[in-house]
Image (cartoon, rainbow, N blue to C red):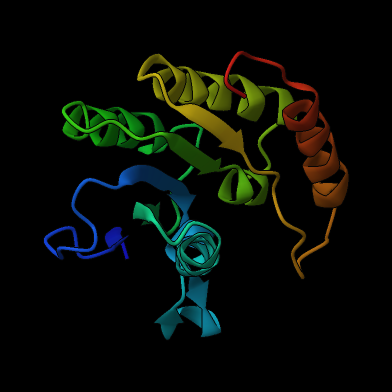
Length: 167
């Protein structure tokens, strides 16, 4: 699942003239909703949209998903993809961009500092659109061989300690 959108019916009379909230969930296979060893996908964006719809019933919600299985923040398409998504949305920019990246890089034994530097470039592209950014930490995985847990924890510490306006 590369891109998906979960949008309220903006042509409905009940939605005309309402506040709007546009969100992009951006990342790799976890953002795409990779489940069941790839047999099905269930993006976390669906739950975000449902919870926000309950909490903000008078708001027109758009929750887009751009998740690409196997993508990497280092030597992958990550930066070009966020640039493309932000360019496509320049006429109707996102209010929030949620970014989850680094899972596949950990599997390729990348260093946390290098992943963090690559993620900062992605965050800058998102912030430059005027959006608020929510940088998500890398989730725990079943695979724990070698130093992967230590590197994931180090990356998550770097993400958690990052400060920026609209962050």
